[in-house]
Image (cartoon, rainbow, N blue to C red; front, top):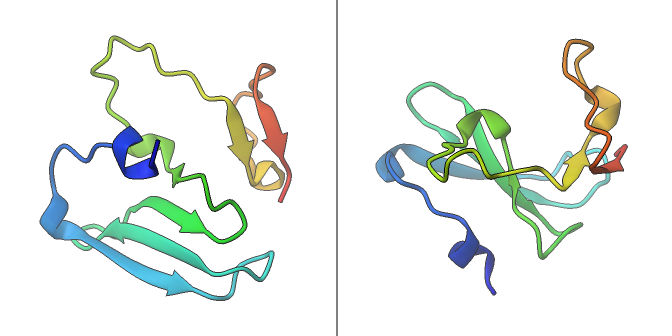
Length: 94
């Protein structure tokens, strides 16, 4: 299944902009998408994980009744101290 079939943008398509970030921690290129109106990061794709779309959790809408649960966490070394540690996820320090 392609990533685009697993991800649905329900509004604001015209406000999404994407840029190619070539100064990442790992050195791989990343396509970062953000809101052109407020600057909020939305999601990104990277050569490092070609079969993954990394989505900023603050952009998710739980219309499915709250059934979404994270399986992976990336950039855990940057976790803010007030965020809970999710014991059930696979973690990538990166």
